[in-house]
Every structure is written in C-alpha cells, then in structure tokens.
Length: 137
Image (cartoon, rainbow, N blue to C red; front, side, top):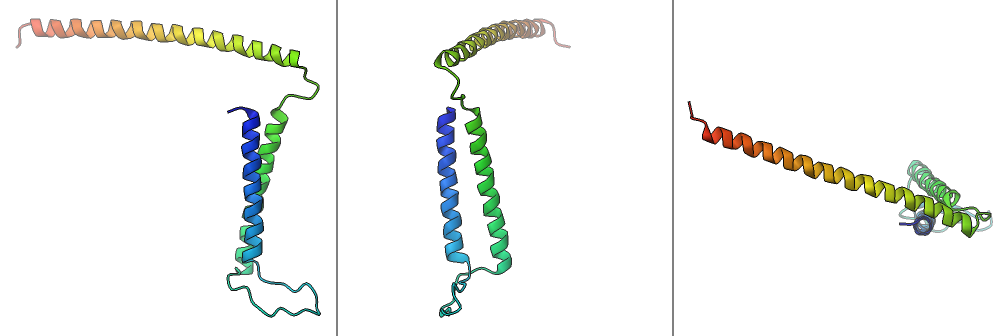
C-alpha cells in the first residue's frame, strides 16, 4: 500500500473518529442550559455520569490525537514540493537497484538451501541404507 493510500485511509479513520466523538457527546452528555431564561424541561435519559463522560472523552481525545499524529507522520514522509520528478526518478532507480541486489541475494540463499537440503537428504538415505544392510543385534 502506498503512502497516499495510507494517508487517505488515515483521513477516513480521523473523520470516522470525529463523527463518533460528536455522536457520543450529542447523545451521552447531560443537557445543559444555554440561557438562564430558557429552562431545561426534559432530561437526557441515556446521559452518562460525569465520571463516565470524562473518562470516555479522554479516551476519544487520545484516539483522535493518535490518528492526527499518524497522519502527520505520513504527510512528512511524502516528497517535498521542491523535490523534482528527476530526483524522484533517481530515488526510484536507487531503490530498484537495491531491490535487484536483494533479489539476487535471496535467490543465492535459496539455491544454497536447496543444495544443503539435497546433501542432508542424501546423507540420511546413506545412513538408512547402512542401518538396513548391517546385521541386527
């Protein structure tokens, strides 16, 4: 997954968290008067206690801040505006060369592992044959 897609997903998560926060505050907070002239005539039946409300608000705020920080890290990892297409292509070429070297090293390691496996199999077969051909005591 590329960084832009990760950032889009992060922004979607941030938006979802924000909506969750707003919904929670809207439905679970007790009603408060906005003016002394207008009394509260109805109680919020599903309002949480002040302690529950405070703890949940703290948890939601922490989650919101973590998502913001993750998105900032993703944004900082994007190329600068001053980064030209030419320099980006050089970076891609360097990364591609490193990947090719890593692929060669991996292929060499796999070949060596297969050779060792064959040698071990051959040795085990020899041991088995020796045990089968020797007289039992």
